[in-house]
Image: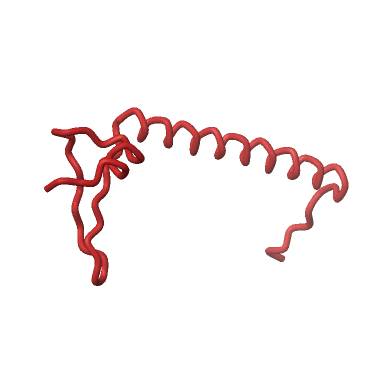
Amino acid sequence: MTLPKRLREAFDIRGGDSVTIREEGDKIVIEKPTSRDELAEGYRKRADLHRELDDEMGAVSREADTQLGDVPDWAE
């Protein structure tokens, strides 16, 4: 199968590269597989975001404890 040059260049696809071909409704979708480096970078970014959210929620929780004091035991 030959892809037009402008698409190969736009998506950095070279002769011999592997692509994924799948059906999506009434269309054929051709995708360049995600590289291990791209996948690892995505996981790193996600982990960083989770750490940031954890830090922010910890700060909010400490602020709430300061403002509200002890929380009553609702199990009574």
